[in-house]
Amino acid sequence: MSNNISSNNSGKIHFMLKSTPPRITFHQDMTEEERDIMLQHIAYWTDKQNQGIALVFGPVLNPSAPHGLAIIEVEDEEHVPKLIAEDPAVIGGIMTTEFYPMKAVVKK
Image (cartoon, rainbow, N blue to C red; front, side):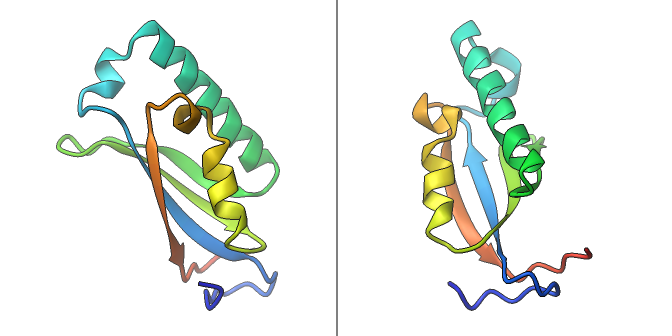
C-alpha cells in the first residue's frame, strides 16, 4: 500500500485506524479495570501525537456503532501493525483495531 499519495512531499504515508470496543455501551459502562486501560490507551496515543505520528485521534460517538478513530502519518506501512500491537487497549483485549491506507490531503 505504499502507493499512498498525499499532498505533502514529506515521503510519509497516512492510514486510518478504526478501533472497535467490546460492546456498544462501552463508553458508558466501563469497569474500573477497563477505564484504567483506556487511560493508558489515551496516554499512548497522546505520546504518538506529540511525536507527530498521530495527526488526530478520539472516540466517534455513533450511537449504533461507537468506535475510536485515528489518522496517522508514518514512514512505511510495516510500522502500523507495531503501533497497533503496542496499544494498551489492544494488549488488554478491550479493543480490536483495523487500518486502511489513505490518500490524505495534509496542509503543512
